[in-house]
Image (tube, rainbow, N blue to C red; front, side, top):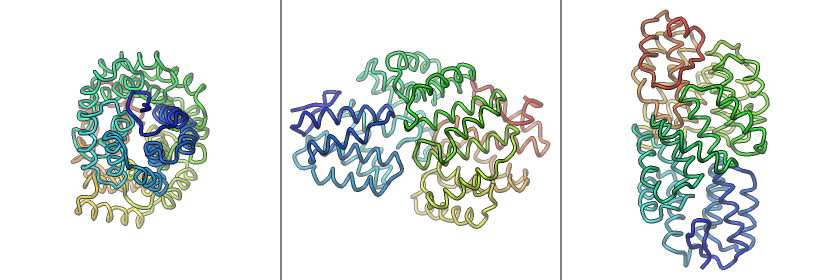
Length: 434
């Protein structure tokens, strides 16, 4: 029986299908272009190759194309007869995840990886802060992801893909000293891995080292394909570092060239979150508002991100609604978030409605109301999903509200309890109380 790159058996008798599948999985895992073409070759060589259809479904999920992902998964399920137990579990897990049954999917993930720890496509859905566990709305999720990666580490050794994923999980869990040698080894072993570049960028951010991040990302992005899935998001990371050191011109050049809607290489959620986060954080740092850019993001959300789905996406949709004064749109979205929360179908719970009210109040310059909405949830930003770097948008907004409300003592207390590591606070006026 043929096997994949990790020695896991595949239910195809076509060597051509196997080779194309292995190539497609490698591109999928490293975020390099060519994954769709490779998997299409695998399917053409063996139309009944269930895991090739499943991998395509996984890629389409990442791109935010739910209908096409469901179609690809249906093809995987229709060809599932005669699969190995591992392959059947792989397809069943993706079915749970794509169906939105997150808690069942997390349980299935743990059981599957206990039996087949090197099924890295399954692991890849949960090994990063934007994945299955990261979008669970649970507190303690970063520790849970790090514990999962710790448990699986003996099965991977010095595998560069795993080292990058493990380092990112450790960094997010505050274990930066453990993360550093892993991410450096990952980059040294295989530079052509966007996850390694991403993990390195995050570690530099958490270590408060913008100069190293700027040097590394500028060089790395110069060699990364413009249509690579992480080109826009890594440009966002570089732009944040430019804001941190006060290089507004370079930050906005990166926005125009790689982060704006018509230039971003990622899926709908990334386009929305990176664009809105950059614009909001640039204003907190003292840059003027680009209302045209905000209008484009607001229109995009109204056309593409119609209903509440997850915390990270919804956070940035309500930001655009607040900036554009779309009170009716925000009220409707908050109402639907609250309905889903009551039904137990909205992972962040009441956290996102509170954020929505806080951002709306901040826009009205009602800083006392913004503070009142944000303070009770100050230690619950994990519920949003995403990384600590992304959560900083909430903390920086609260800091700016304190400064605008002339509450320097509260601002100092916020900075005093800020997690150790990041030192740059790109918020206008923060230096007066830092």
